[in-house]
Image (cartoon, rainbow, N blue to C red; front, side, top):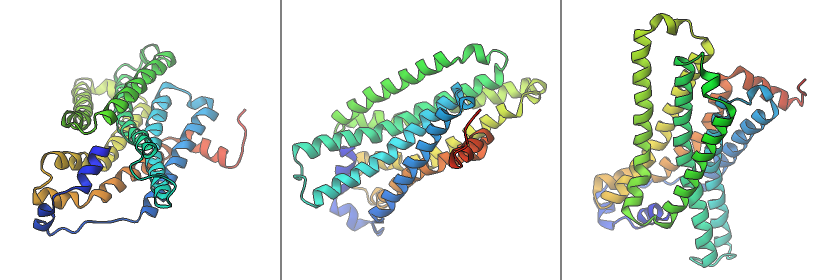
Length: 297
């Protein structure tokens, strides 16, 4: 978001002088390499689900939605690096109309990545909840048609919100809305977890009879959520500090880690596919067959 970048580039000199924390600078080549790996890994996830009909279920469709979100986050950084490279080579006029438009499009990819991840994790949490506590009615509740409709609604809302946030990116209410979605998702999933825990205590015998696959899915969600919080929370905090205390030396000290926080976001897109593959034998088998060019019956 230009609002974020501009604030970062215009941190008050007084805050910098009052802070003893040097600004951490990471090579752009590292960002670019990790981003390319993130795009390729998540693309493989999508191809695996398309290729293997056994994976074409609502649960894996929701996982594909999260993979698309991760891929957009990586693609954002790749396009940003390409845009900077063309500008440095003199092919683009600095602050020109084309660069401004391209910058807005690239920024929208970043916002789509966060919003898509938030809503995808939320719908995965709801899916796991239904799987565990409404196992007998799961296939009648979570149908492929309903899953597709939910995903279409989610991505339509994300696209509309992303465009709106880019247009009004310089306004503080936009930043507040942007950052508030992160804790709201955590509250929603936490409520599901608390309810799941209470139901598990009152139906301990019933829970013990559930298939291991259902419980394994809940554990996978917990791991995905933990990685998402670890990778995105520092950046969300960074945005809040840039908006509300850019001149404070303590805030400036934290903001010196701007590129480290950005690197964590790129790493999220690389880590998630490993979680899918590690937790899903069916997905691992599909990867092997894709690598060795085996055909499905």
